Each structure stands twice: as structure tokens, then as C-alpha cells.
Image (cartoon, rainbow, N blue to C red; front, side, top):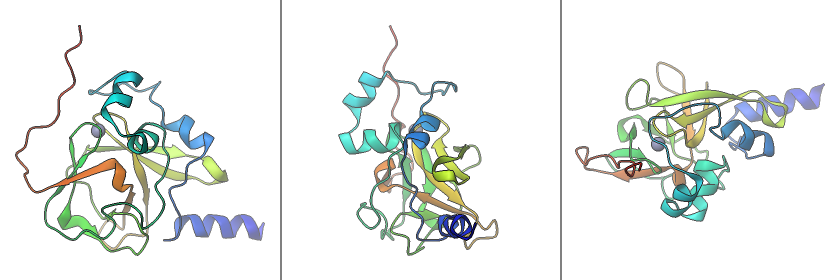
Amino acid sequence: MFLTLAAVVLAAGCNAAPTNSPAAMNSSTNSTMKFPFQLTEAEWRQRLTPEQYAILRQANTERAFTGKYWNTKELGIYRCAACGEILFKSDDKFDSGCGWPSFSEIAAQGKVIERDDFSYGMHRKEVVCANCGSHLGHVFDDGPGPKGLRYCINSASIDFGTDTNAPNWSAPDKK
Ligand SMILES: [Zn+2]
């Protein structure tokens, strides 16, 4: 019992990685939801690096403090690395000490979808891009903002930029 409790407390805390597991992978595939931006698995593999594919499309997690954005403090926006949709703003990024980029807010309502993730015997909320369904990370309720949220996001799932007017990537024409 105590061990179970400890695991849950750890999972909610800052050291908790948005871990990958077979269960997480199953919950993160997009067989049941239709997203506006869709590609075939072959197209995803072509578009993304192997690391990005493993994280965005298979719900893997980069190791803490290894991603390119965990310590980024520049002003700009963070787009979905899979589809180009604007997801987060630097205004809402904070230093969580976790080793992953952390945000207290999403860029606009409806940009991400939350899904229950019961992997590892825990209940966490997985966060996926609302436009393409790609895995971004998890959201926890120990954040610093008024909403108390901490979006713990893989660097590999996002692209930083300063040009907010750049057009989103578009899906290739379906024949
Ligand atoms: Zn996306």
C-alpha cells in the first residue's frame, strides 16, 4: 500500500517522467480519433526524425535534461513538431526543474487534447496535439499559474520559433 502511494506521489511530482510503456503507446495511437491533420504511418516516418517519430507517434519520452528546449528562455512560440500548429508561448514557459519544457498554459483553448493514461498503474493525463493527435507529454496539477497546471512537454514534440505569422505546415494533397 505504501509503495503504491509513494509511486503515485512521485508520479505527480517534479521528478516524474512522462514515461513510455506499452500501455502508454496503445493509448496514444490514433485509431479511435479523427484529427484534422492526418498522414499515413509511412508519411509520418518520412516527415519526422526517428526520435521524433518515437515520441510524437509512439508516445515515448526523451530523457530529462537532454531535449533542446528544457532550458530555453527566448521569446517566441512553440509549434507542434509534427504539424506546425502553434501550441505554446514563451510567456507561459517556466523553469520547473524537471528537465522538460514546462508551460503553465496552452497558447489558445482547444490546441491540445487531454487523454487518460493509466500506464504504470497510475492515472495521468496525456497531452496530444488537437490538430494531428501527436503525443506531446503530460499535464500535471502542480503548476505555478492561476490554473495550477504544468504541461510537461517533450522538446522533440515542439519546434521553437519567433515568427508567429509563418504559415502552418499543411497536409499533402490526398489523391
Ligand atoms: Zn500537431
